[in-house]
Length: 402
Image 1 (cartoon, rainbow, N blue to C red):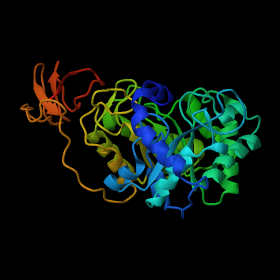
Image 2: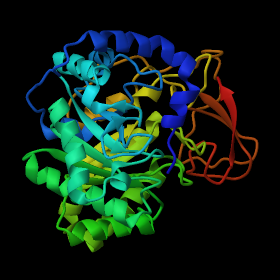
Image 3: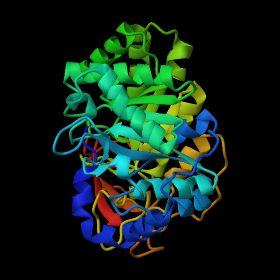
Image 4: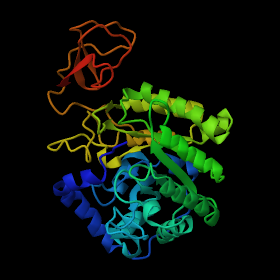
């Protein structure tokens, strides 16, 4: 499932020169020895949203922490070198062994009372599971990352192009199991594409491989977006289907399966033009907490702000919001209460949305106009219970902000 990740970093290069330059200046001034901190409770690693620290116009993480109460970030992504090899790099270009930039960012987060997990893989790029020749070599490469940053948590984001590569997935899962044994207490998550059926054929093969080697991470998380999803209800349906797959493929009872299940969403406009609003995150959060899910995260903090002059999907959400609205759902999943902020306002024509608010129980017919999440929407034909969005059956026309 495609996310605006490495590609968006290139598209946003002009913007990155601003905020990212500030972060890099601070980071390189930090000592080469990464600041260490006591491990947070696992609820924070389970709630850590993704942040690209070197691209996609990264925000100041300590400012996000102060504004939201967040304590942990999921830093992305560790890849094999672009030129090949079995040594860990950031984004395929910056060797972990000589890194000072990300190390400085981590030290600042820890200095503010937080911590990080590091995500390996992601969409695109060459993964270490592909280039390292064995499970032990793959594990050794990731152990360098753990040692470099004194990590207490790591995420295996298993996507294309290695997702369909049986040998590469075997290396990744085998390495994850070895790291569990070598680093007692480390929090390990596995993230994979999501479908309406929970996950696809390769996802079920991944679960079977984990079962066959006796590997149980803290959670298996699916990404229910970029696959024809329509809001929070469709994501909850996918999570419930995935729960059934965890029971049948991992042999867990229902309660254990929920406790080892995770959600990894995308805030705002997805790469496939699905729209996920604050109300959708609320729907999924309620499901996650009421069913005892083991993880709730999203892609990404870099995007958790309203678009301005640029609508680049890698650096803003393309929905009406206050900065860090979606990050606060992660804080709530961790069991904390984020600071309150006023409701988001539309970037254009504020206060002129005179249409009645959408109501799920109301029947709408062609030509009816409603307001929803700061936009005005017109129904094309009869509908009930389908919240306004640009996806789904296509019944709603988005008339823009109001």
